[in-house]
Image (tube, rainbow, N blue to C red; front, side, top):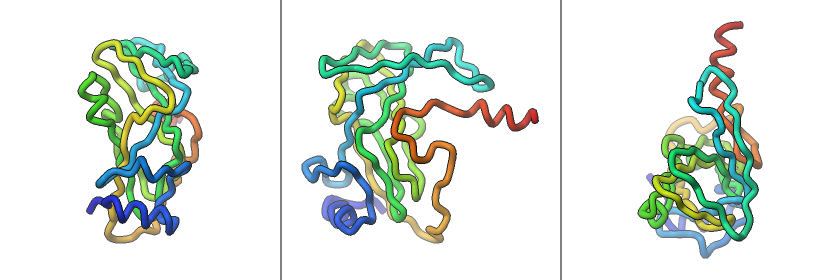
Length: 177
């Protein structure tokens, strides 16, 4: 089951959901908005090869904004730290930006129980689109779990405060050693 407005507020107040900084004005009927931070990573490699470390170009954009180009993939991070030991977060884009041609969290929208950090966002624009730091770019919903909650996420993407590039190549490296 998904948490609704009052349950989200109650769980944040009780410390069951972590959102920092928290702004009650960003809570929706069944989600909470999140903002994009000031940095982007643009994938430099073409073609991208999952057996090799991917190269990125770092972009620090200002309040003047930055124009995302089509046919490029960008990584950014949420301004807020988000997570919970009791509820599973699911991050998605805002419909208002989707209607302008921004795909956000195309494949990795489901968080893990126990992970509390700034989340890496996947951005893809279908046409040139200007974005701004600190704009509300997406929303997070929280899902109740059933069963054993003692298995908390302790993976390689935990506790990052900046956009984190893919480490899928490490899986290939481990297979060859």
